[in-house]
Length: 140
Length: 385
Image (tube, rainbow over the protein chains, first blue to last red):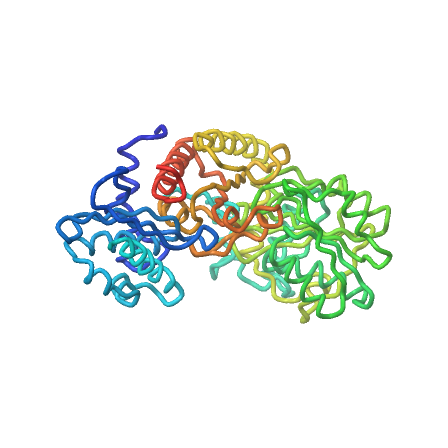
């Protein structure tokens, strides 16, 4: 085996067993986060929102691309614990096809329920709500 | 799963298991080693054989080995025992901030009894200089307690140079040698340490048994912490666990025969791991490379969050500091004592290697870590795309 052996990497990856006991929705979105990344600069219809801080060890940046008043695609980048990363992935999936008013109605409590975020990580759900609000603030 | 947490514990060597089994069955030497009859004497003989085996690895006399339940008890007995024997009034201890929790917590307990404790700050590479220890001594200093090899960063302390300096000054010297015994040559005929703690399960012996070396000449005196039947020369009462003790003896004998070979092989694998990890920019090795024990490599990864780093490596059994059961562990107090900030201390991994570690495992582990650190960095909005 040498560094970069794809077959072995896949074999090892397939044995993911969530040894740390994260809630399953968080584990799945953390290990296989959907919609990671950013839109190329200048992409039309994109609004960006960011929340958190490096000092707090969690930063979430959301980019929502609107077409005809609805979200066509959301991308995210995150620095933080698996909960924070899962929140980014969940919002990216959930936001697709939604209008501004529907997006603005998202509350941290809904995120917590959907992802089974425990009490001591409630701030990760707030991170998601804050990043989404920051993005929506750019819409006139 | 790739197990790289041998500093936390090791699997039982098959030969050790075989040495233990006869003492667990009805037709074996199950008897109480303190009993005055034939089976008791046989059990006693097994205990004494093991005592000699443990002593041999340390360059000690058999009568200087006191059985305990493990290194935590050994450290408690050494430190509390020495202080209580001398009397805690106006007593002073010198130790360091990077000791194992069982030493630090024992010292803190003694502080509540009126003992003064100096917690020395190591240099940025984790070394506590003998000169710094000497400077901290006061006329009331009863004991210096330092570990031989740090369990988190693998740094080998200068205990061999410090020991005679403390002997000259009449200060007792306790050394936690849990990560040194069986990994580095330890010869107490040459190094005048007074009290030395060891554990079985760090070198392929069973959990639940350890020992404290208590020097006879000059005699280190301890107040017992466990009162009862006066076992172990009155220093540690309680029926001896013959099977555990026989296992520890076998493990220590085996470690002696394999020491040089194991140390050379593990140092080579440790260096291979470090070489491979350096494919990543912005990583830092913790501890002094020129004073590194063969089996430990501790690395900090900039630009990633620690919990996500650990969680992203479910295929690896590694620690973020000392043994911890959760990805959400607090940043290591050892790394913070070395001057790492909380974020970097948290984004650190301790890889510890053992007899089961192969070059193939090291290659796989390094490739996984490199891949996952790159993935987390690319994901981070704090890193440029």
